[in-house]
Length: 531
Image 1 (cartoon, rainbow, N blue to C red):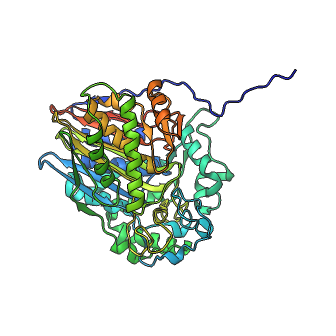
Image 2 (cartoon, helix red, strand yellow):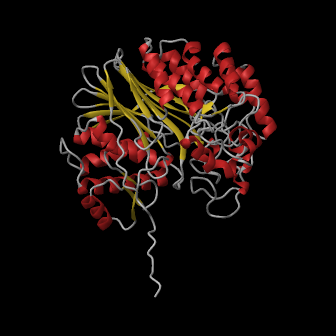
Image 3 (cartoon, rainbow, N blue to C red):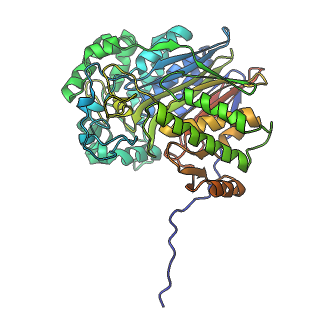
């Protein structure tokens, strides 16, 4: 008799992964790559402030994590300046080219396409990859504005570490190989990016035969960084770098022209402030998940009683799920934001704190993994696919329009706890960003968790559908309680990519000035460096 073998639908590895929090009296830097964290920490050691460190680390992430973010993208920074006791937001999000219109994205008539949002399908998925998916980038303008308004170092000194790292190329490891391999099927359709990351049609291995780390030359990116250092950040928008960018984009078929770059502006805004119990939170007020965070915390305050210490119990997780379901129902109905499928977002988040009490929560993105797949040959810049943020159906709240800035899911938060400590929180992961930030805020405010406790605490994800995704490390009683109340649940491991759960970074600075940081636990590269 042939024995029947049962094949499980999913295998959950029982790894016990931990990354202890790191503390220092003179500040910390938490990023998704240890090289960028060390760059920022070195700025702090040499007398720079948290803003200087954040800008330097952000520029470096564009070199060591080119699939996540870079000078071809955009983002937000939420900044606390201690000497002014004031929070400000720097917005440098991407915007539609002035000549873009809904007619550039004809619909096929099918319900959904390749977009990570469930927008109606566009012919050829030109809103997802390729030249028409590129929005006007704001990263360099945002970094320069933050440095000018809130930093202490000169631009040429802050960009120097990224220049040197770009000159030696992208250091390979198994994670870099995985990210390139996962994207290879799409990447191979675009000449310049495949030439760089798929030499001979295949990604480089992490090591050579002698066990030495291999490096990927990043085309002309290093010379672009050096030009930006020499000529200043304005060169990106109205100088020699702008000319090269505009030329390459026009040749590729993009709608972006030199005037789009010349007219682009980043700006400083007042934050959206939320008073949650006895705590105060500040986040971007527009084109972000900031308004959703405020609304959802107000609901949580009325539905969940804080314990003051410990961990969430089953009922608390049920409340998290219900409030997240309510939040996304409201957002989808009122803000015009498309329902996003579970795909790996391409975003970086970093947090910095210094010895003066300044904090930065900084999110930057090129949208999808390797953005538009367009790497500009004359500059080596990997361009975003920010047009995917827009609804391709005309005459809706988030539809394509020339010069418009789209909604995003980014949510960099600065907070003050009732005990006087301050914190910076943010995450990457597209639609999974908000649930991660929301729960981490609750862990700190409602349960008085330390950084290490909060960053390792199991979470749920509910991000636009009825599906409730539960971290496998959650208490079994809580899992069963969630299954009993919500019909669609699944238990999943906390993987190395932000597919199922957001990827957070967290920094807390106590009243005495000691800063502690925690980072994305499963990542092989995420790290906190203390000073």
